[in-house]
Length: 266
Image (spheres, rainbow, N blue to C red):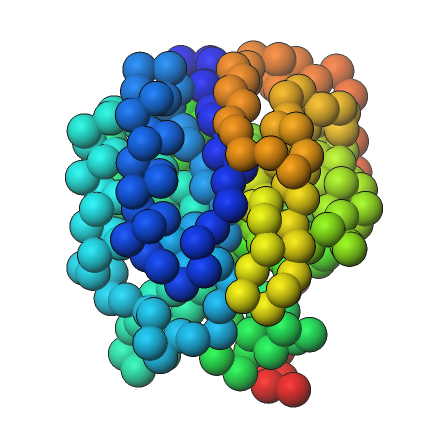
């Protein structure tokens, strides 16, 4: 299968109220039934970007994952986003990709947002997550990861679609727009960025900017700023492979090796 349908959900998030956010998401998924194959949600879609990890984090078998797995099967679509996860005494900003066939892929956010003191409340992940779904190779990253191109580098075309889920405030919106396009161009891949709208519990305002970018950095589809809504597009793997074959910049990429870094809690 060469084409895949993907939908971006740009939404406000009720601060630290999981049940409210579950109800709102359920309504949106009902409307998307039968129209798409992948639905992408903002970072920490069920709580907002809260640092109350001890109170809000859940195990993998908790309410959030149980509910999302059921909906993925019921509505026959894959669900992607992040939530607060608890595991072995640690807390993670954990990205997820849940398929209607019952497969689960997790990614723990590697670059924790220093200025928001995320590193004081969460443990950083140390592994990238690249996985296959319906003939496509996908890579899932989270918010602040967008600023670090080495972490997302697409070595030998390991992935075709790079997904960023975020809570990215309006005051830094220019960086969001610029870096999404840069990641698409430098990695010769499609890039999906989904951000929230509204005001969080720390009085930060988010104006959206959710979009899909082509490998040339052009906008394929986007959700209007400041508004709740969704946008759906069909992506072509054939077109991507033709781009890579006709202009193979990936063959001239510099080799490198990631080394383990010492976590900084400041």
